[in-house]
Image 1 (cartoon, each protein chain N blue to C red):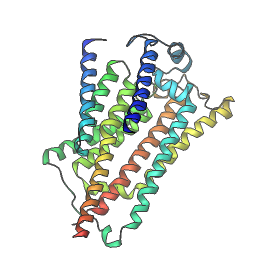
Image 2 (image 1 turned 180 degrees about the horizontal axis):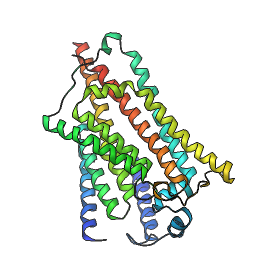
Image 3 (image 1 turned 90 degrees about the vertical axis):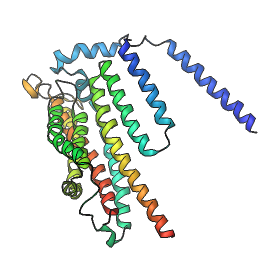
Image 4 (image 1 turned 180 degrees about the vertical axis):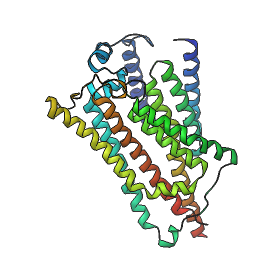
Length: 86
Length: 247
């Protein structure tokens, strides 16, 4: 294992921990995207460009986009419920 | 009671950790060691299939049936999402379906950046699908990148284009289904022409983009399916979003 790979793997560990420790779903989504970006670098460094491309497209674009849309929907739903209660 | 559960749980965790550590001692060192299957694939790909991307040769040729199964997992997942979100749509009343003319917008810079990215990203997606048998990438990656192009439109806040995508959900469904069906057809083509399901039955020696027999065709089918599937989900979610934005 070379120094670069060790560095990126350490970063993956740190960011992964941050994702778990974050409470706000929106921040968690963005951090999850960063984690995917780092994982894509890891896959590329261990000579798996196919997997790196998949990780990049799904982990940093598709999943965050769907999560953000879903979170937005939930927040609107809650705001409306509170409006109705008042 | 609580103490007892802690002891039982702790014992379980210890057992798993010990078993895991024991299993890891038998592994190759990080980045070392090859498997017999891997070596066979590396030797067979170029002479037998004329494809330089060994990963594509495995997923669309040697283990095509596995890919077919995965394909239908995605297909069924999208059907599930569509059913769930469309039943929600009918719950909202008529007055709520009024669509906002101008949605939330990002900064001017992010809009320009996103608009500039749409074209190149879409071209990149087509390139990655077309060269699936030769260079890293393929139908799945290309289809997902095409979705990224649409994500760029969303970031740019171009609601007019997004409304078109929303109303084209039927067409996306059809693309999804056509792609999934295309892979099945290729599988049966092998059964009919060569006697085995997913046998690579097309001439593999054709030069250029068509090298690899069924691999480039399977890439196009999967690209269509994945792009259709992901865009259907995004379109359904955006539809939900538009339903609830009122001016």
